[in-house]
Image 1 (cartoon, rainbow, N blue to C red):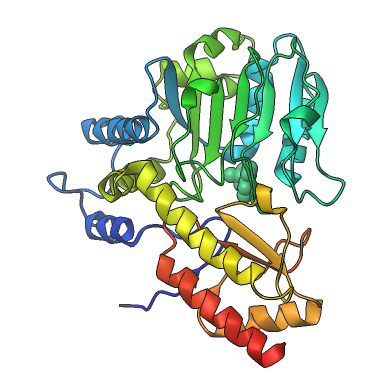
Image 2: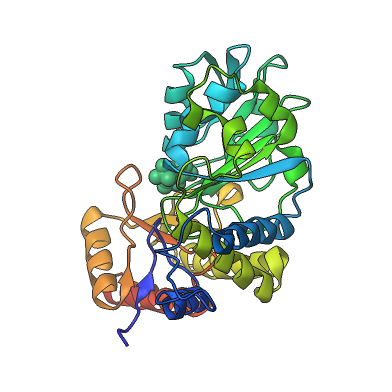
Length: 361
Ligand SMILES: Cc1ncc(COP(=O)(O)O)c(C=O)c1O
């Protein structure tokens, strides 16, 4: 079998090995079905069971109550930048908290629908921090407040959701969904592209509180209307059947691991090891994010010169650590260590970084 390397990519990203193995085994024919998941009808009993398993698995991991509906849509998290305002911005005004490039893209689409109040932005200082609660200039009359729980590019993360009173809270959780338990009851809507912590690209997971569905106008285009997708159990059109199947397997893997508290403990350990290496390097490695805003999923850091950064990336790639080049807006390096990324891979990267420092310090 082909050797696997350490995949630090930001997304699509590493998936749990037991999930890949089970999918590989079943790709020829699903047990008792005689056909592959790639071949079966989305209207079949078999697929009904798979989508139900995916929903049940996520519902139980995130402890989602019956007040919410779960959807598997297409168009990426990027389409949610449009669907959220189209469905929820009934009085044509919403608050957006801007903590990175993805929040800015969400704002761009929301502005096509109504007035956007930037409740806070940390763009000054190149998004190295999450704003404090006191900084938020929230409008109590806003249709909703939108924030991005983890900023994939800049490596910052909200460790506690913003307090927004009675205004519905909407979250883009694409890059940290399922990394720990959250209180879903605080949210009106959560969306996430699957391709980091949940499965392959091509599926977007949406959790929507039932009362929000009253806002979806019948005049909306069918495929952009949450209510239609709920009424059709995400099967109004042909969904990404394979993606939903993988999500069901990932949910089972998380459950077997001990659920999201167990997952969080592992994620915390992994991130701590890497941040410790950065902090104890005497300034050789400089973390981009402020300490209290650090992400557990995407760890961003720079070296003194671009030349050294290039050298590190190229030597790391040769040594089997792939996907470490930082996004151009931060430069340097980014280690994405999502749920499925093994602790051993982080330990090995840290040894590699220490060795690099010794040789090039
Ligand atoms: C936080 C966040 N939001 C949105 C997106 C866009 O997702 P998609 O490519 O699925 O549209 C990404 C992609 O990396 C992301 O990290």
